[in-house]
Image 1 (cartoon, rainbow, N blue to C red):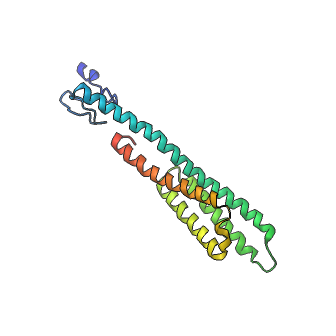
Image 2: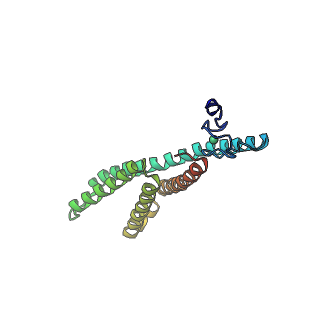
Image 3: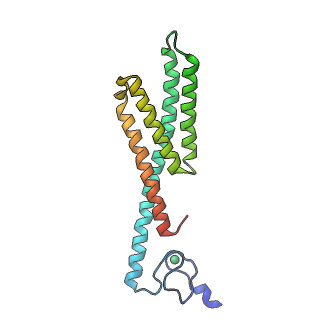
Length: 174
Ligand SMILES: [Zn+2]
């Protein structure tokens, strides 16, 4: 019984049995050479640093969704000043409310389901941009740097979410 308290993995501090060759929790080579054990810990440390980096990319992507929301909200209000007689105000307002609402929902949703929310947000954003270009080709170049940046952050975020899942599986953390 006393022995159980001593058998704690040097890497993750979880308990292991004396007959275990690898730690059941983290995969640490319990019976390996000092060199193998050091290499395992070094590799794990690198992955943990990667994880911090990837999480920052996901945060940037989530922020992009909030930026899109704010930007659409502001341009929707601003556009009210340019409504011409004969334009359908009701249709205009409804379409902006739906768009702003959708991006806000994706932004909030991305906290719990980042992959699905970011993919949905990116798809809707690209569709909106394409519709704008079809309606008025001149919109392609208005604010193109911001548009490209937003798309780039969203794509980086989606890739980061997938990498984080992979590393978490390797490190056996949830
Ligand atoms: Zn372990």
